[in-house]
Length: 178
Image (tube, rainbow, N blue to C red):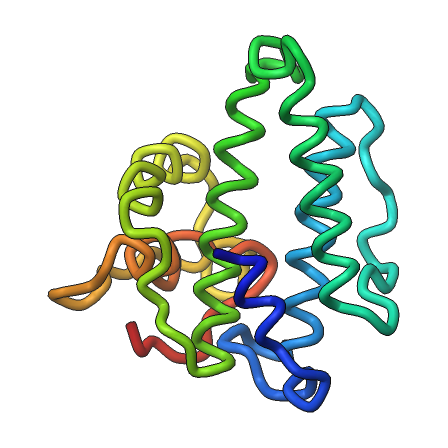
């Protein structure tokens, strides 16, 4: 799902605005690629410290595909799902990367005019995980997590995951057109 969206982004679209305040498509793709690399690093026991680096270079598709392959390799490692990462089991890391990918895939789909009804069954399955992972975090205007808002009637499961305030790490949604 995310790979197909990333592949559909032409270089001419990289400067297009993203639905996240102050971000364009390139910044969104860089964040998505970094997040994918970050979870692979955590699973490997080597947390990344290069948040502000350029993770795309001149090939956003290749960079994302390499990050996704690295993450899949780590997640497929025997025993990874049962390993402990602080208080959480490995399967929690998998849930987090799936939620991140769905939410940022939703952002990307909106930015490029693609359908935001992403992986409906997977998005539905991830709704409880989103609540478990993020409901207890502080929500403040302008903070890492904006105050929660209800998605409009008829919202898809992906819309619910990406609703403003449901999951807005380090930025605020500037529009709600779910």
